[in-house]
Length: 171
Image (cartoon, rainbow, N blue to C red; front, side):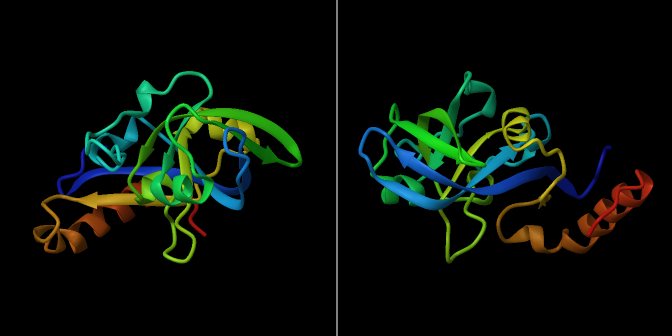
């Protein structure tokens, strides 16, 4: 849908998972593993390389690669190239860190209390969890960091119309 007051919007699938960095032996009991719809996230440039500041694309992830956010990388003492074991229903799944990225909603930093996260394309995460329901919807109103506040109410109205027009159920 063409929205006048929205730069971009996407749904996220997020689930907390235990993760072990097999390279360092460190682990974390609950890192948010976020599945992102790459096509819908084009207007949300929030996957940013932590060291270079470059915007990264989910399309650059191959096979079992993930982006790990800075908070998770700090806890796991992880770097690009490290191997991670993610446990889902006590089953191990292996991933390689493609890059360490800034803490943002798209990289799994969903709360201030527990900002550790990792991100991969929606199909990978959806298949892993056998789940296809959206956990969270992110919307970027037109404008910059400060001037987007003015577009907020109009963007909200457009998103509500999009939801109602497609008969989407929100809980």
